[in-house]
Amino acid sequence: MAGEWPDEQNDAIVADYFAMLGDDIAGRPYSKAEHNRLLRAVIDRPRGSIEYKHQNISAVLKGLGEDWIPGYKPAFNFQASLVDAVVRWLNRHPDWLAPAARMAMGPSLSALREEAMLWIGPPPTHSNAPPPGELEQMTFIAQKYDVAERDARNRALGRAGEERVLAHERANLLAAGRTDLAERIRWVSHVDGDGAGYDILSFDTDGSDRLIEVKTTNGWERTPFHITRNELAVAEERRHDWRLVRLWNFTREPKAFELRPPLEAHVSLIATSFQASFS
Image 1 (cartoon, rainbow, N blue to C red):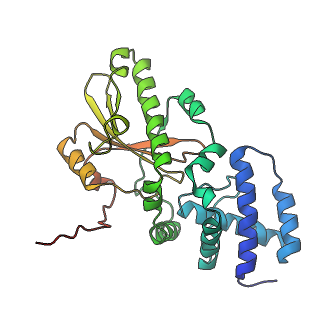
Image 2 (cartoon, rainbow, N blue to C red):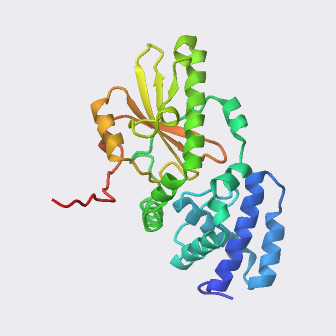
Image 3 (cartoon, one colour):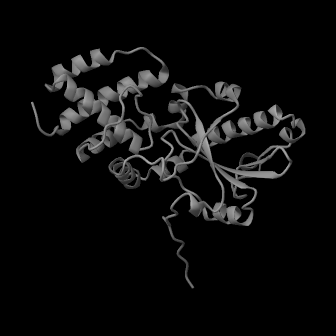
């Protein structure tokens, strides 16, 4: 059978992919070859076509800011109907996006705390951007399905990310022999609430303040995120002290990069809501 995949075939292969992905995240053994063989009997497609469609699903999930199977390298130029099939599956399985379920699949918080030091890499730039066609498809998906809003509403994910950065900051100061500063780190958003414009008060080794706003995603490093007017105001007011730490790939292997003000030098800021008042 050739040509476009109908919805029933897309739904079948998407369900199969998520079954493998669940095993992969949990560290359970599974056979891609066996999954492929069983699918061929159901949807009457050749092995190579099924293999490539699995890679297409990885690309869709990357655009949605979700985990994908590392053994299926994302392949782009997929049909819009495949995106719809992935979203249908997620809508039918809301627990997949539930923080408790996802965190239970990956490393425990205690394990994350034990690792302490984070991998801090360079932020995304034009020079390390993916090919334009890939970036365009992923940007379209992220905007259409509002990936940034989903992550912003995922409070358990946000809290876990802040705790991970807190452990990193303490470990970094302890490694530098600044136990005095490590003991003064404050989890501001947890103790005082979300109104400060940053989540963690930490310190550089010279004692200067580090006001850290943490943004966490299970997706890749270019997954969009929300930032509040207050956070932007504090970033501008305390631009020498304020930092945005972006945690990505959180469920599997947390990595991070830092952005310093002005944020407009690193990202495009788009107004997504307006305040209406009677005057």
